[in-house]
Amino acid sequence: MNLERLERFVFLATLKNEAGQKDINISHAAEQLHIPQPHLSKQIKKLEEELGIELFVRKPRLELTPYGQVFLQEAQHLLEQVERIQISAKQASQGEIGRLTVGISTSISNSLLPNILRVFRHKYPYVDLVLQELMFEDSREKLQNRTLDVDFENWYNLQDVDDGHFLTYEIVTEEPLVMVLPKKHPLSHYPQIQLQDFKAEPFILPCYEKVPALHALIRNACLSAGFQPKVIQEAGWMTTILGLVAGEIGVTLLPANVMNLQRTGVVYRKIQGQSPIFKMAIAWRRDNQSKVLANFLKVVREVSCR
Image (cartoon, rainbow, N blue to C red; front, side, top):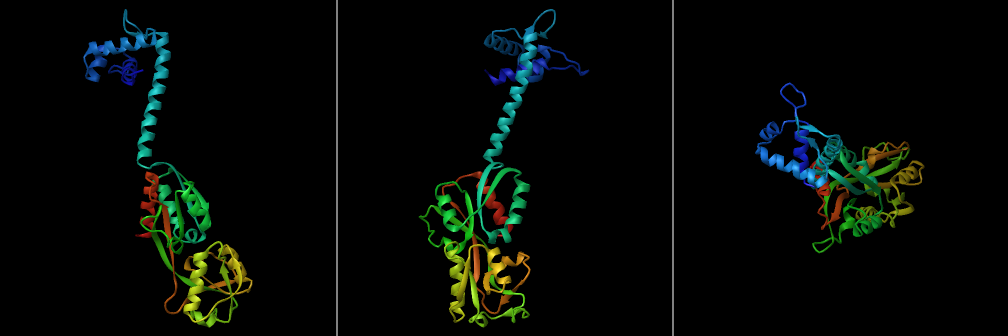
């Protein structure tokens, strides 16, 4: 069925005169459509032949038949649906509707993520964002099998990514590590401290199996300060680590974004001198041509000022 014929049928059947009253007049309709009257008459006739029914009574004046009245309602619904489809297709092509699965971690959740989500939701309210809190090994596998579109992760986990890799990435934030101490620790009243002051202290580290890059960064920071950390406990989540520090089990080093977690019983102190830098990156498949992804990356760059 020809959509143009449907549109012109609906136009004719709903035509009104200058007084706003219904006035089915084929001459007036053709004039307003800027087409010859015979052409419009022919299109209506072909539509009737397609349907096998008469849509209009021609004499004494042009009026809809009972079948035509029913068909008019259905035709209007159909044309409205076609318009919605066209709008949706355009929105999809511009990345304004769709779905994006995003891998997140505690570090990004404590820093840029709230602003990223706020800005993205404001600009693209009809995109369905699915957030998944993942460990490194899980996110890499999900990116590989395309069940994850984009992932925020420690930059150090991406050192194997080169020009020939299926992934690409950008660094979105850089921040120093800070010392996390029990509130009653003897050095807690100093605004800044030296890392070597803790060479005899028990350390709580992020679990190597879950966050190997951050674990290695902290160990290397201690080695650069001249000592091997005395690790008495490892934990997979920052909240667990903070709980252990609050319980005076030991001390730790964590990215500065951890200070956004209002945990009682702990204090955060800057390290004097050159503090180790924690870098957070966003990674995605090189071959992912999703416009939704492109819009998300644009917002991430905007929020991170990169």
